[in-house]
Image (tube, rainbow, N blue to C red; front, side, top):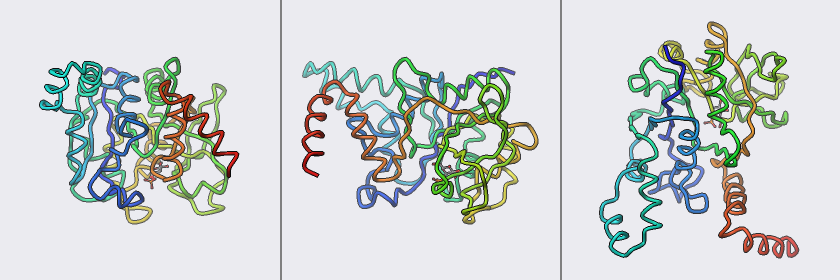
Length: 294
Ligand code: G1P
């Protein structure tokens, strides 16, 4: 069976409570980083890794995401008639990036359940999972995080997840993996703990929301009981992958932002605007002046 990773699940059923009232009528995945919704940045990362099918696990009131990746006939027609071909090109590119397949998660039972909702679309293939709250920014000449994981999967046939080192004070915010670092720098995962309490682990290896799994994880998810916070946790199924099949942890090159957090979201906006040739010079001048004032 081919090890090529062609499909990605993007869970997008969350209510975006932390960004209320903005997210009362706009899905949090549509909040912009400069001029692109966060979901577009995540889909672009996946596409750069060779992903063709994006499986969006959506809830109610998320149709704006589906519309975003669809044809907007009136808008495209108007832009064409007005000769605004640059904008037209941007829209056409967005809608041809990938096949976006939407699946409803009818009850908020946890991340593990959200991923399980994609089972029948993924079938018997390896697949990536990208959490939309986490943004990974890679330069054009760098490998994206999903690409790094997919490459390791192709080379080893083992499920591989992104890991990053965090200070002890932050371990309780993440899924944490424990294991042994191998000579090539990858981690052989021995244990996975969802948001450990202080002192529960020595490990500082946190999961920043990028994964590549073999389809076997669905067998484990099928039988995963509610865990931490009464939710079906992806990390509990990962623990079984680690035990039964082997699980690797891989570091990554990308700059990562927690866009699910207001400060992280602002940081992503500022840093990505500094990468934007149209905005960089003006923003730099403004930031320098601002820093002198505060
Ligand atoms: C989820 C996962 C956790 C992971 C985190 C990354 O938690 O359960 O293992 O480290 O995403 O953002 P959440 O942030 O949804 O509570």
